[in-house]
Image (cartoon, rainbow, N blue to C red; front, side, top):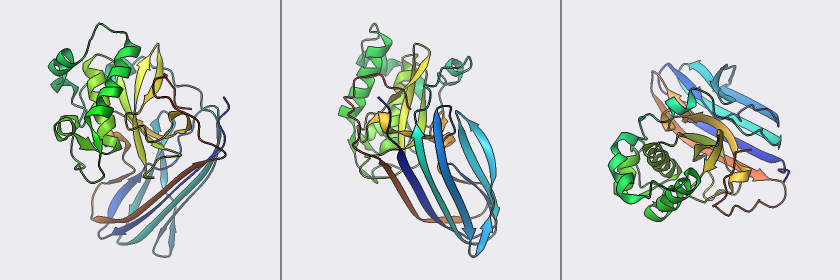
Length: 270
């Protein structure tokens, strides 16, 4: 199946109250097979700013700014055509993405997965079991979680948003010794529309997408940033002075009808 073109955008309004360094991860990842026609505009009051672009791996890009006080408007738009080539697992991936991380504390789940899941099943079956477990265990409730909540907090609360679902999936898979990571994406069809987060796991040397929210078809997802958890993939990081995020508007659409995601297939992000 050839993926239809996708149009994505994000507009952020940030009040900067003291001189600071900001990092944005809102641009579409640059990957072989994708054609991306994009624009990025950053304006502080009436001053046009040019950010520094930094590669963050898996095609991701960080846009860094040093700014003083004022009203910062960030506008990003992209038309994405084609399909990204499936990402293959690199030599270091297994080591890095089996370790506990800030929001995916897999070391706290070893005993839990041993009692909750049949660990003799195949990798594909265990990924399906985890995805179904998280979908059944959690309720999608905007505002129900705190930005500092990790996977253990989410399991106990029984509710969260996409990043919470993804963190719990990642932690459970790592506890089963399946390398897993978090990906920030634009998600055509997502409702409510926002930046979206999903998990990825290694199967037969290739990364496949896992999304227990089932809010958007995985075939249409557009990669932004990839990392251990949300600490690596946040759309905005502030490293010094004070800021207030006044608004964030995200859109993601696809030409034609959305693809059908049956939820059980192993699908690489394209």
